[in-house]
Image (tube, rainbow, N blue to C red; front, side, top):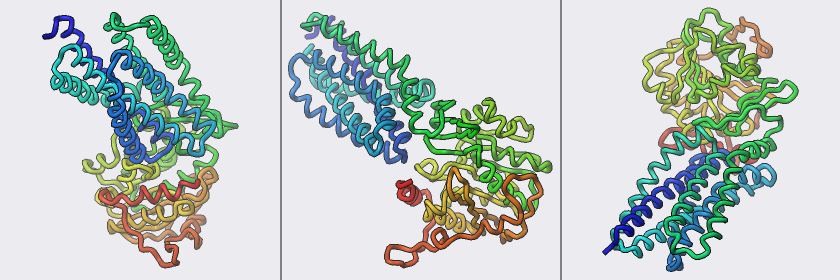
Length: 517
């Protein structure tokens, strides 16, 4: 029969198991986010993270059979290790990526996931044995510790999504979660201090680790930024971890560049080529241009071009991340580049998923401009599907035009023509346009409409730096190594299929196409 002190200690063990479970889940999703940012393909990285973490937990559970004595000491050592390895994981990953690269970052990340998973797998069996040792029946101790673990898992996931990532970023979050692990270890150390020999040694080690982690919280992010700087050609002048992505601005000798999750969005030296092509070709071909929809475009550069048309009555911008729009409104360099485009009273900005917006909107648009990131993960892929393009068609006015960026027909040839094929599958007519943009290379767009498209009807009647009516027809010409005739290794023509929600073929195509660039 348990004493009152035993009941108190067992309850504290359940609390400890719940807290370390919260930390374990936060580390797991943090590793997935790190993999998505550093290595790309979020679905792949989260799948590998979950698989490796669970495998590690299985290994840890197996190894826990060897730990039958000095259970509290073992638990404290495990938490010290989780705090050190997990705390410095994000910081060191940026360093490995900056200085080693060439696959070293992936090896480091996956090894760290496996190690933290193994340590996490060791925790629960040890706590269950300790609860049983105190006097709790084994079936009750197991059930209660597991309940604390699973309940803590939900809390951990929510904390990462709504608190740690948006408020502290990846590097600082790792250090803060590690401090929680360490504090649990020190709490347990204090609670069972009478059972522990060399108490001062454990306490001293804990204090040293605590000091290291506090140093990481205070200075780790700044040092990691210096590592990250090596990943970019130009000096970083702004860095932010938003709820949705990592935002970076760089500047060198007048060239301002925006990166989202490491992917270049524009270079101020040549972005006018991209945005003039995206905007002015469809605007010149539509029957009327009163109501315009922009999907993406949070940097305001599409708006800058649209505001050259006085007859526009309303522009709706749908961009998921409010932090990008806030940056475009407030950053002096971006405001100069987009010419304070968001101050136009005709502009309405909505921060929501483009697919969700198209499903619920009842509006129709004369021109729809799709300025979204490339389809390199599941969430972006759905914005390049038959279902999404059908929604665009359903909200296009008769005589209206859709213009969508569609990646490079040179570097990602099959991806580009699959996007074109997907548009055609909706019943829309398409025209293909591409041009050279020095910072990107050869880049492609798909122009779509309900009716026939005569590219020779283009009449550019606004001021431009690159585009002219005479130039446009030449942009529809493709070389033999970039046209829509796709052949397999045997020289046989491949019939491209459309990209759908059920069969997202574009993600695999995109990853294979860009892996060497």
